Structure formats: C-alpha cells, structure tokens
Length: 250
Image (cartoon, rainbow, N blue to C red; front, side):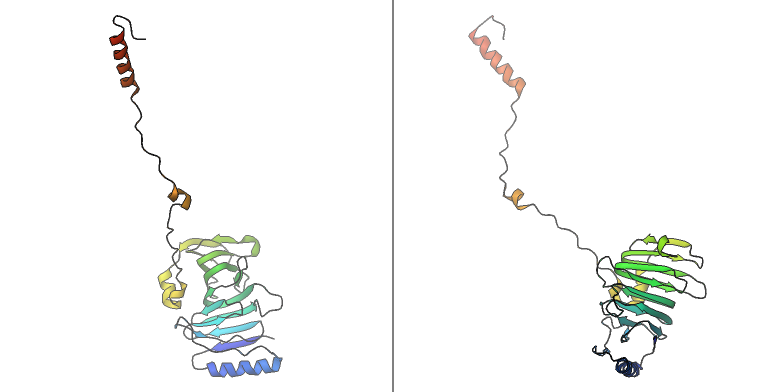
C-alpha cells in the first residue's frame, strides 16, 4: 500500500490525524510521529508514516522529513518524491532509496560510512551520497537530472554500471539520454538561501604542529667551532723551525 502526503502550511494537524488513523488501521505499535519546528527555521517537518513506499508532495515553501536513521530530506517548492526503501522502516533495509518526480531536494544523510543514500528519477538515473550532503534536481519537462555534491562521496550516472564520481563542491547533470555534463562549481550561496546555513560545510580546522615530547625534552648539543686545519699546520711548522733551524718542516 502506498501512502500519499500532500503538504501545505496550516494542514499539519490534519496530516497528524490521518497518520494516527493509518497507524491504528495498520496495527502499528510504534510511537506516533511528532510534529516539530525545523532546527533551521526555514522548513516545516512532515511526519513520517509507518511504512514505505510513501509519496510526498510539497507545493509551498520548504519542508523536510526525518527518517528513522536520522537522515533528513528537504523539499523545495513544487517537489514530489517517493520513499522506496527506508533504513529502519523497510524490512531488512540498511540504506535509503527515493525517487524524485519533480523539483529539488537536499539530502543530509546520517547513514553509517559506506552506506548509500540513493536518489533516482523515474527513468532510473542515479545520484547517491555516502557521508553527508547532496542536492538533486529533476525537471520532467526537460529530462535534466542534476546532482550537486556539497560534502561527502558522491556518484551519478544513468545506471549502476555507469556511475561517475562527483567531487565535493562540484555538480553535474545528465540530459534525457543519460549523457553527463560537467563538472561545475556548486553555488553554496544559492543553496544556503533556500535551505539554511546547515547546508554549508564546516571548514576543517587548521592543524597545529607542535614538537613531540621527546624532541622538546632533548638538550641541544653545545656549539663548538671546527678548527682551521691550515692555521694549525702553519703554527706547528713555525715551532719546529725554531727548535731545529735549517731543517725542513716535516
């Protein structure tokens, strides 16, 4: 059974009621979903139903959904997605997979290292991330499928056997035939304006280099001047001639 959620501001209470009804009908014993404000204050949270697949439509503002593994999916305006496989929700699943039907999403993955958060379009084109953050855009009108790797290890391609590496801070896109275009530089200012400051990667601290304890405790050797060999030989020869006049210096 597919659950459909169409999110609009002011309808959160209605959604919550519907989800409680679904949970009752499905006989779920899990705690009911909660509605809370987004920590970024730029998005409203969509409660997660009890089973996948789940179709979610967002037509106004920015909304987000939090998965059981802690990952968050932010939906911009006029975005439709479908949750296919959700770790902690789908039986036996350890990775997340969704389909984007239109619009743009920002994924903040909290899956363990080496586990992929995969986003596909209806044609099966793939964008995925392990480690952190990716922004994916799909236009059904043009067929363009874009992936911006904000942070982490990202890949994209028309199918699993043709995945290309997309470096952090870079983006690329596939045309409707699956041809790759790019890479291009990610516009972080534009993404921050849409999704909030969380999407900007934290700069790595500059490493501080200090002497090892062993080196710090060592006593430096005293400085001694190297003797001048030529001057020493001349002085010795003069002394010898004084003692033995007329005898060549040995």
